Image 1 (tube, rainbow, N blue to C red):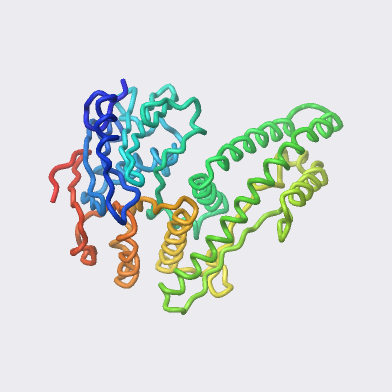
Image 2 (image 1 turned 45 degrees about the vertical axis):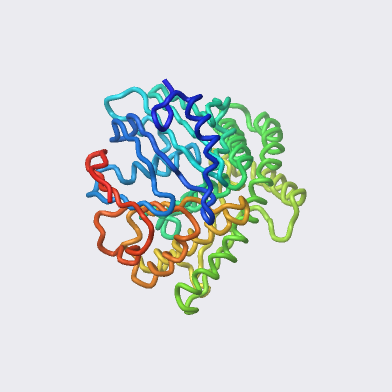
Amino acid sequence: MWYNILGFPNQMVWEIYLNKGIFREGVFLYIENIRLINFRNYNSLNIKLNRNMNIFIGKNAQGKTNLLESIYLCATGGSFRTNKDRELINFNKREAYVGVNIVLNGVERFIEIKLDKNGQKRVKINRVELDNLRELNSGLNVVIFSPEDLKIVKGGPSERRNFLDTSISQIRPVYKYNLNRYNKILYQRNNLLKSNKSNNDIINLLEIFDIQMSKIGADIILSRREFINKLSDESKTVHENLTLGGQILDLNYVSNVDLYDKNKYEIENDFLKKLKSNSKKDLIVGNTEIGPHRDDMEIKINNMDTRAFASQGQQRTIVLSIKLAQVEILNMEKGVYPVLLLDDVFSELDVERRKYLSKSFNKMQTIITSTDLLGLEELERVNKSVLYIDRGKIMYKE
């Protein structure tokens, strides 16, 4: 069964919502309501959010991050914690439901996602079910900053590729479609490389996959190059401000396909040539060694590789710079600021970083989780709601 946020019949809710004409100057996108049923440790939750700021307080493992995860799910179609939808469903239940009501430029939009343990995921936007998750363009854009995001700096290339892919997909949904197509072809090509066919037969068949991979791969490479260039410019400015000009942050795209100052046609040709020239090596290892699935984003401070020397404090500052840059890019590309999700990180920042981050809160709705109110002194004068969570339930609200 599909539900609506307030528990009314869907048609009635939308007639009420569309006639409201809610608009609040300075806030163009915000989440109005969240309803969860059998999602993670929430049996049932129906909550109205503050349009400016919401702070969820609770001990560890009470459901604070789960709540942010449900919002992220409605924005992107996936979790930032797992690739297995089954894990999002309450352990003792077969289905889960997430409903989020957002206001975008004064117009209300209703996003619903229904999950079942058979692996099916159904999505509705304004009561219209999508034929494919690739069609998801909910209008809900989010930027999340969690302790796990330190992997962007200290983790391997796959962590940074995942960050790039989720970030670009919010800006251009077609990017996610191209990425899925590319990964499918890559999977088929790798299976062919591992097959028992003769080498000559494999080489002939590889040409078909190589042509497809080079075309789609060139689109992915161009999108990543454009995004990283913008991200580098924006994050450099933020980082200089955060470090009072003491550190210069640089982000560079690292690819085994020659992309410097080249157009799509040139990148496609270079990619195709490298796939062909590397085919014998690919046969030996049984994998495709060339392509955007091997890309990375190099992060440097004052021309030094951050993976080798950055302290945890420096890592937090770098990620904060990158996330705030992502916020500005989303605003530039989509014409609206995203909802900012801060998962147990605000109180971990030093006073100066907290003050700098607080300046962004008047631009967008912000949702913060924390184990207590310590370290949140900068938010005393902010219009906000403080909610206390215990074992998947909202205990009380201030």
